[in-house]
Image 1: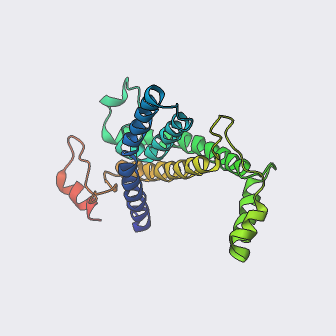
Image 2: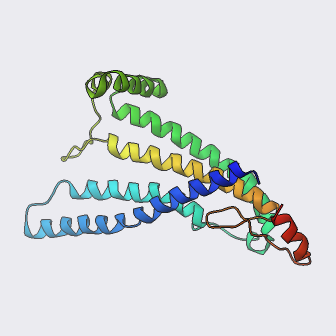
Image 3: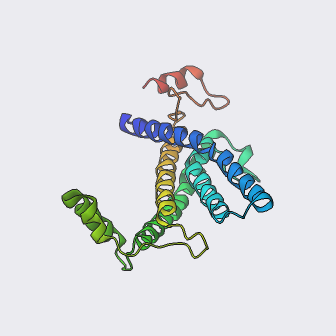
Amino acid sequence: MPRIIVAYVRAVESLNYRIGRATMYLIFVMIAVLMWSSISKVAFLPAHWTLETAQFLMVAYYILGGPYSIQMGTNVRMDLIYGGWSARRKAMVDAFMVFFLLFYLAVLLYGAIGSTAYSLGYWGTEPFAFFRDLAMAFLSGGPEAAGEVIGRLERSSTAWRPYMWPIKVVMVIGIFLMLLQATAEFFKDLARMRGLEIGRGARAEVIRAPGKDPAKDSDRSTA
């Protein structure tokens, strides 16, 4: 495989691995928030912020953990005949199916960007133009100039009424990272079709099929 592809796969997987491992600890923060919610309802006045904070943490846990789940192969699958296939045949099918995932994630990303623009007070139909103007205003005039581009910020309709843009930014970041990871999975599948492993921590290891000459596989892995 070309070195630039190998470098891309390992860089993306290293980034998503670190983010995924850090995101795992959000579950303990969410538990603490829900525990305080229960305590406050019994011993004090109910806290308005706990339920929605737990929901936001769950969204971040799910979205930011998505790329790590894809990388580890721990996402839910229905396996009827897949498990009995060879590694090469699995790679061929996965390389084809990943295009459906890429399309789905691209649609999600576009919607998330539009929703984030809406949360920042943009009600038009060109969210990319809005963020371009926002970036140009920030670079030329700083936060004050950027504040003039931002409209009325979206807030939740609950009693706490938190701003919605922070969690929507997290959604954009998480979906974008999943898109990068899905692309890396496509390249990994192409490598597996050639009998190589190029993922995080791999050293171009050969996938030996039954009946094949290990010496030839070894020569191929060093090519």
